[in-house]
Image (cartoon, rainbow, N blue to C red; front, side, top):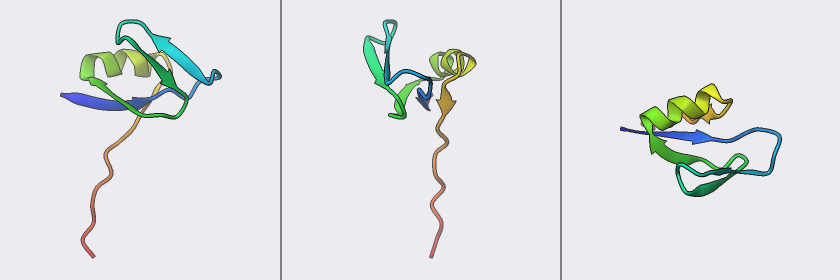
Length: 55
């Protein structure tokens, strides 16, 4: 299962070598749930899926 997280720390971007990417501040990325939990423990923010409402 995938989880969406975003880096919101003091830097404009951070490298995540285990994922082979650079995450920019506030830009959501989708990662495996286990990876997301590790990032959240390091201060990243989980981005909850928006529920669609009927009009």
